[in-house]
Image 1 (tube, rainbow, N blue to C red):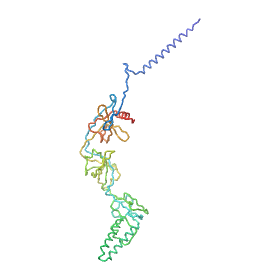
Image 2 (image 1 turned 135 degrees about the vertical axis):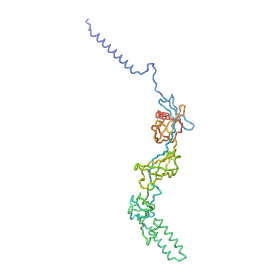
Image 3 (image 1 turned 45 degrees about the vertical axis):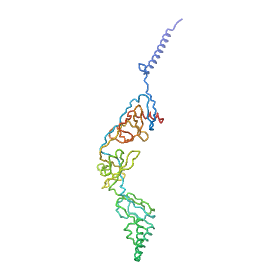
Image 4 (image 1 turned 135 degrees about the horizontal axis):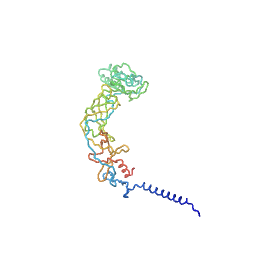
Amino acid sequence: MIRDRKAPRARRHRRGALCSLVLGALLALAGCDHTPSNGAAIETPTYSPTLVHQATGRDLLRLGGSGIPGMTVVAVRQVELPGVIEANGQIAYDQRNLAQIVSRVAGRIEATRAVLWDYVRVGQPIVRLYSPDFMTAEAEYLEGIKTQDVSPAGQSAIAGAMVSAARRKLELLGMSKADIAALSAPSPTVWMRAPISGTVVNNSASIGGAVSPGDVLYTVGTTNVVWITADIYEDELPRIRLGQELEAVTTAWPGEVFHGTIARISPAIDPATHTAKIRCEVRNPDGRLKPEMLARIKIVTRPGLALVVPQEALVFESDAYYVFVDHGGGLFERRRVEIASWRESGFTRVTAGLRPGEKVVAGESLQFDELWHQASGTS
């Protein structure tokens, strides 16, 4: 029998190739195994966060294990505030320097002599009103004067009282004393005059328009003195007082400093921002400061103290900031805080929610927050 000598060589070749494939697979598996040579596997740290309820109503977070890698705890620092308080504010009219022309009768506007932003002088005729109420009251007044002139001596006091009552009625309807003195015949139209000198800041009057008692037709104001209303943090309130001098600057006039004083301090605190409003009277002789302008005020005062924490300790959620306060023994409290701007990079000023010496989680605060929600079931 003749044997094929090529067949054994082919089988040997196939066996060699198969061994090479198996060896390659084993080497590949060995290369994917990252188990250390000593045979010990690296374990991913696991936590069992739980909430511990306190008698005070606060919940504290307890972590199982040795803590979160990278976690750091720092003390709340108390630092010295500068001797200057700065705050943003807004300019407004001094309400004591605003006056309105109000219709006190039902009628119609027949003429006007001023428009928006006109400067008017006190006593200047502004708007002419038509109303039968004027004619009736004027007729009563003129009839009283006539009766007083012809009354016997014994009845002159009664007639005089009637004239005084009629004159008072005309004044209440909005007529000036000069116009009343100049009356010679009843008329249904009367000129309403500017109550003060100033600029027309509001004009609601139009010729032919109907008016009712109480309608505001014009508002006249002056800006020789304006108000700036600003917010001051509650921990800065002990450093300010009524009558304290201040400086104000605006973006419109960056090179000019305006001077004023603190006129009022709000009796209430805004619970959302922990600030109180102050009202400053600022001199504005050339009228550069305009109502609704933004301004920044600077109050020179004695230094104070402030609390600061690293920015990385803060966790923002919805509309509030939180920190995790270390109570020791692996217990942490999630606490809401109020913050303000601070000049030192990497730190934030805390205006409410913390006390000096307390310790807060700085590193890994976001992971702490996730574990808190996991434990409370709100994740």
